[in-house]
Image (cartoon, rainbow, N blue to C red; front, side):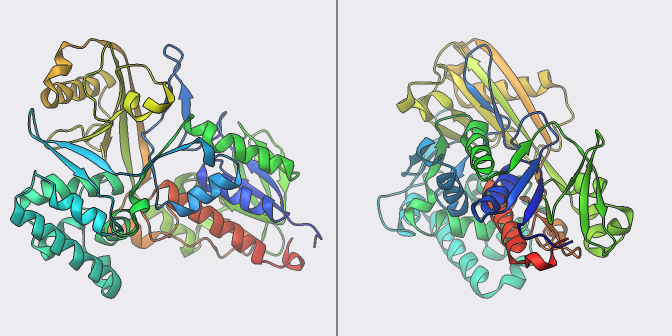
Length: 457
């Protein structure tokens, strides 16, 4: 039955779902957002540690200046003022005690700012730095003129094509690849790496800025998005699990049935949850459609984040990459948020991306690995005492960036006329990042708006 006023249901309240809902609410659509968990945020949330009062991300989520859609979304919900921009990218890379080099961009127009960073990167010989720059230029040319070739290559195979030494891979290419794609170079898509490096490091200088939130991640975007949606006449419902999508007589989605028996009807529906969850609430006849059945072939990749509160500061660097250890990245929360005067002294966060070999191990074993890596890289830390620790695992943190999964990523539009998809795993050309999630949410919202009200059911 046609309705003069559009209404829509969005399933999932992470970045994808809330950005979709905000985009719809701004255009006069009455939106109901349904989240299965008690709190909003999906796989990108934060919480306040009860002992220290510090806010803790479930994973160390970093925005970048090139996240144009995300930054615009945050502006629209009134959260842009909560961001801190580190305009000068500066990453200390440690290969062992006393073996330090810094990737620091110069105050030059992009991409020359990154050229200067590479020229000053002392972990590589001068010949290797020149080789890395030539390799980067060739990769960008392949991205522009030879996308099909990149689509067929893994990151490791791309390095072979670019003639990169094992040392250059270990000290430069692979840390960047694992951090941005969340998986091993031997399986990750070269096309995705090329896209990330072009947008983040080889465009405008501001695009490579690291951007942090002054508040917890959940407070950054969930609160403002909810407020905007509700002001527009919509609602956000948490702790409500979708049991089934119910189809109408003409094959469109008529309603969602919740586990508690409630039914919510609308003219349009957006699913903004991971593929396995989506396949569970699709009707059987829909799952049989090749568009949906192929989603079962998507793989995921885990991330482990370890939070340590030490009794003293052990480094002045805000952000450190570890080379040759299981632990890959250290975020010094006290230094990152120094201008806020917050964060407990000695509060460090460690990230292990693509952690397939570790994610099923015990928390104590993982904690010991991280502490041993810290001691190996920063000997001064051996004198510090651990006041508190926290190990967080996201077993299905992101879509795996392997060639098959990247090929299987679906579009926002589905074979069901009034049903659309959003999520960081939707085909956006980017790996499964916050920016990819927001792009997909807005694309799904645009697809809803493009449908004539006369075609709504």
